[in-house]
Image (cartoon, rainbow, N blue to C red):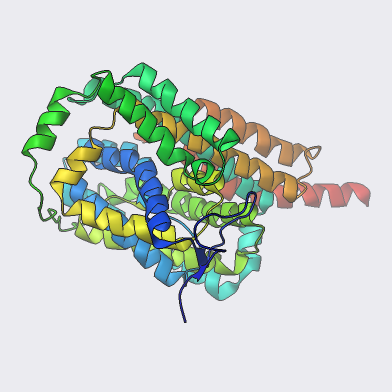
Length: 435
C-alpha cells in the first residue's frame, strides 16, 4: 500500500481544497513544495549554528534526519519540519561564556534536553490525552502558538538584523526585503493554482532575483560559492556532559514540549482534524530528533513555525513535501557548493519571509482560541491573551541567577506552569463564594 494517495489528478488541486496529510501531488510538484519548506527553514537553521559555534553542515544533516525520524515515529500523521531552535542560542551562549565549555558541552546539554522531552512524550502517551488537556487546555495551547508566532517574529527581526551587522559577508538589501514580503502576500491572496500554493518559493525567488540584478549579493558570498567543493562530509561533534551547562538549558525542556504540542494543535486547527491522540508520539518524535541531533553535533530541533506558515499559506499538508524537504537538507549537508548557493540569498530576504510566515502562525493560535470558544470575559483567560500578546510583541529578556531567558522561553514556561495552578485556585474560590 502506498504511503500517499495522489490528490486529484496530481497536477492542479481545486481552488480552496487542502492537500491532506496522507495525500501528495505529482512528485515534481511535491519536490517543488519541499524546496519551499527547505528555503523557509534554511536561513534560521543555518544562522543558529553560526551564532552558537556548532557546525552548519552537521545541523543541516541532523535537521533532515531528525525530521525523517519524527515522521516515522508519528506514523506519518503529523506534517512537520524540524529545524534548529533559536531558543537555544541565548542559554547556550551564556553557559559557554561562563563555563568556557566548547561545542561538545553544548551538544551534550542538547542531548539531555532531547531525552527529557522524550520522557514527557512517553508519560503523555501512557497517561492519555486528559493529562495534556489538564496541563495545556486550548487557552494555553493557543497562547503558546501566539507567543511563538509574535515572539519569534520579533526575535527574528533582531536576530537577522544582528547577523547582517555583525557577521561578515551578509548584505541586508532593504528593497529586496520589501519585494519578498509583498510577493508572498500578493501571490497568496491573488494568485491562482500553484502560484498561490507556492507563494513562499515565489516570494523568496523574487527577492533573491532582485538582489542579483541590483548587485546586492555580497562578493564574499559569491567567492565562497565559487571556491566551495561539490562534496564534503559534515564534521561530527561528540557530546560531553558539563554540570555548568546542562542546568542552564533545562527550562527549555518545558518550552520545547509546549511548542511541540503547539505544532500538533496548529496542524489540527488548520486541517480540522483531531490529533490529540498523536501528541504523545509527536513529543517522543521531537525529543528523539533532538537527542539524535545532540549526539552528532547539531542544534536542538523543534517543529518549525516557519514551515507551519508554509502549510497554512499553501494549504498543502502532505508529509511527502516534508520528506522531500528533509531529504534535501540531508543532501545539502554533504554539498558545501549548494549550501554556499543558498547562502547567497540576502539575509533580509530570508528575514522578510520568516516574519510573514510567523504572522500566519500567530493567526493559527488566534483561530484555535476562537474555535475552542475561549471565554475572553474570564479574567484569567483574558490575562493569558494579554500576557501572550504583550510578551510576544516585546519579547523581553528575563535574567534569573545569571541565566538570560527570552520572552518566548519564560512566557511559555509561565503559561504552562502557572495557568493550571491559577485556574484551580480561581475555580475553588468561585465555588466557595457560591456556597
